[in-house]
Length: 396
Ligand SMILES: *Cc1c(COP(=O)(O)O)cnc(C)c1O
Image (cartoon, rainbow, N blue to C red; front, side, top):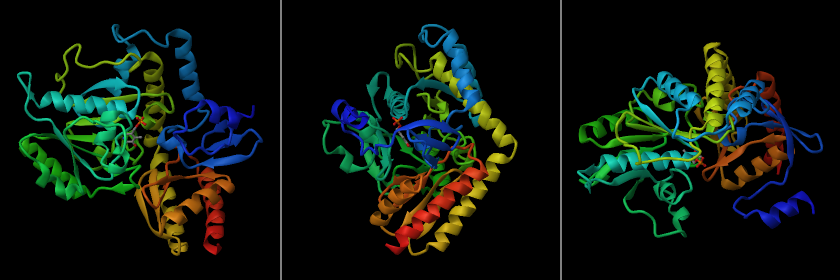
């Protein structure tokens, strides 16, 4: 049986899968089984933050695997404690963390923290959580219900109660009532189409929520760990959230999620847990990922590369004004807003034919989430291929 047939026979069809077979990677380059080279402007949807085949990360994982991969959370886990300390220090927030295995799970943790905060003497008093209409918070039943895209709620009900959707940040104050315990937002919506929120609007919202004792949950599953240029997008927006969730870029591809909160004593033993969450392997990997990115940031190279990437995208948006409305995003979380969904689809397809991986987001955005370690040479090669693809879409 051919590999494609095996996949289609035995794996559930949840993805519109492209049947390229990648066998090797080196930073922002990938190679398929025939040796064809691709430039990766996706990093596995913002996950492979330190690039493919990263030697330092591989060595750390290898070293840890030969010692202990997993014990359980019933015993002290050294890299877990050190990782929590490092994340708190770099974030500058006075918080504690809980480790999970994915973004959805991190958000489940955030929702549980908020719901517990809303309880008074064991009686549920406040439970409603306001989210945004084009948000994305994950695929578990509760995270899916928190996701404000009604089309995704067609099946799978009944869902947990208590989620309210706002059209925009500006509408949130009108939706707060006596039962509202939290607001959960992405500072830059990723899946929703690379949509940055207005900084001042977010700061005003944060102030209002503080006054009303409503918790602010920031879903940084995609924006966190230097993706936008700062360690957290919350740092970039200069706000002090009550709860922050992390996942994608944290482990460099090793599954890990985390929820951090200033409500340091909200959970008592037994309130929450995870078998795999925070084990030796994933937290050791995340420690190494953060060390690599910290050095890159301190060297000034990370910012240099962000600026270069942005400049090139702005040039392209201008040069191909027939295809694009504008360039959007921060750091290495960027998009080009295509004039239509059809153009978006064609660009992604032609880019692939040229040996370049880019993502879709929202209805009409071509999304770029390259590894944060991408080199100038890799960017140049990627954009060269991208322009070739655009030429073909433009004349078609
Ligand atoms: C990807 C994503 C999630 C879901 O993460 P999983 O690891 O797939 O569960 C949640 N929130 C945001 C903002 C994301 O981008």
